[in-house]
Image 1 (tube, rainbow, N blue to C red):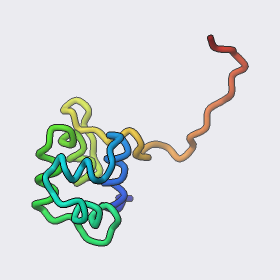
Image 2 (image 1 turned 60 degrees about the horizontal axis):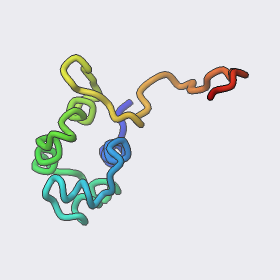
Image 3 (image 1 turned 90 degrees about the vertical axis):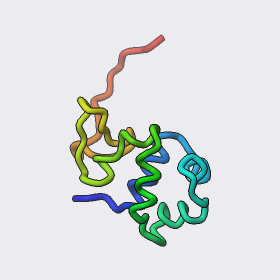
Image 4 (image 1 turned 45 degrees about the vertical axis):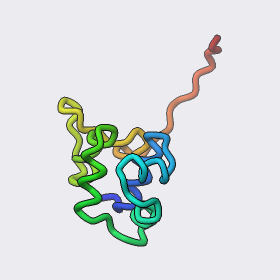
Length: 99
């Protein structure tokens, strides 16, 4: 199932540890325009997507954003915080002490 465009923008921003204003400045769009895309109040037009994915910092997310596909061999990844794996995310507890 595909993730909403606005949610994907949030995942990219969180993964890059940026604020909405920082992304808007990086790609050369008005903050309120970008915020509208990320909040889901408006859809990002093709021109906005081109600006976002032409930027070297965000190019790696292009295939994931558009097609829900990744290809790490070609540098196409999902954001680190994107949930694209199995539903169970627990691990067993170890009593080993660290440090």
